[in-house]
Length: 255
Image (cartoon, rainbow, N blue to C red; front, top):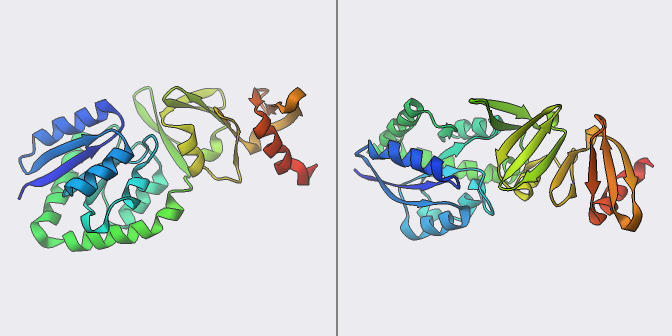
């Protein structure tokens, strides 16, 4: 049996690596590649691939949102590809869904493909689909809150607890995660990450800035409704007019 496979990742180099690894596997046929979640959902609904290698964090529509946009009758076997969160990985394992952690390891990749071939041999496909359906039911919770972020640093992958992050800034197509004196880059959009951070702990003060409220030492209202937040380490961050208003409302019970 030839397993029709779709690659979904917003990073061209990541897609290229997976494409090269798959070409060495005669049981797998690449039917297409998608660089964003909206395109992926449309492609899955139209072409009904057998297998999707699905990135989690992508612009506009992430991997979780892709799953919710798929016609259940066309739902493929899914392998998650992520540089993400240990909590999410545990959730995948609990539902017998496999995952690949970026940067993708060749041996780990081939182990995953062997597991997929076993399922398509007819021995466990229905069970995997049932577990995928069960996992889908957990998405409203697991998609909203994360506990860790995986970042690359000097050739290593570090897992940062979100509570360790002081503040986050948008840097082009990346996010700058400030942790003490260190700054780590993570590919993604601020709006997408904001949805998945604990709302009680993180607050967006500007279109390009999110702060950890536990790190705030002082808030200074300025002329015309703008403001400045001063963190415990002395970092000064601009607060937009809208952010200032919401921050005052948030802090009002404590004033």
